[in-house]
Image (cartoon, rainbow, N blue to C red; front, side):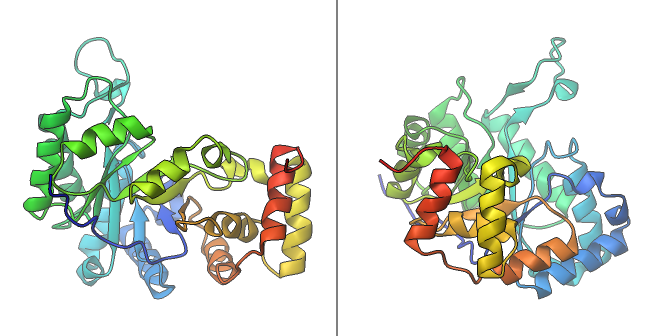
Length: 294
């Protein structure tokens, strides 16, 4: 099998996650959101992480309206989006059950719908949101390869897959799987010890860390106190230190940051210059795991 290049490079300190865009009252107006997007681009942050289930498609729709209002931004933004989860309200089977669908018909429709909602001609990266036990691997692989060949997506990847799940898919594909979104943070360092992280790095996937601050749990209790104390020493925010801990890893995982607050984003851009030394990295790991390094 001839597997081609993995596609675009995530050349930013973090991706801007759009999971809560539909909840932001101040960014509902297309002009205001266009201003916000342009400001982020001027900050050097040009990767935006979407999924069709974010706000039940509202996130992509709002983003697309802003791009339509200011078309010049389309050439500057880089978009990741995900599909494959069917929410109960979208299930027309009568069961109203949340489920996964990675069939070619569903994925082709999902890609076309995302392009239409966002108002762009290509998605830089398209990810299967969850592993699907009913996936017809050969058929899904062909659909993903065809989407790349047609220029609809620059590269494809996965999210929340285990090694044999992504390898099964990769063996059937002509194009290489590029990005892999996984839950990884000081609050959830387990992938660093169960072989998952090494497996995806070994297979040439770019790690994208979702929930890089553990939904805020890294700022609590003993770990939160340690982050606050050390952040002061390094002249960064606690959040910036938590992200620096991630970026110190081999393979340089790119955090997916959910905040939409301009001041917070500015802090994280400033803090991204920090490179942690080994001793500090392991000291934080000890606090996170509540146990000494063996």
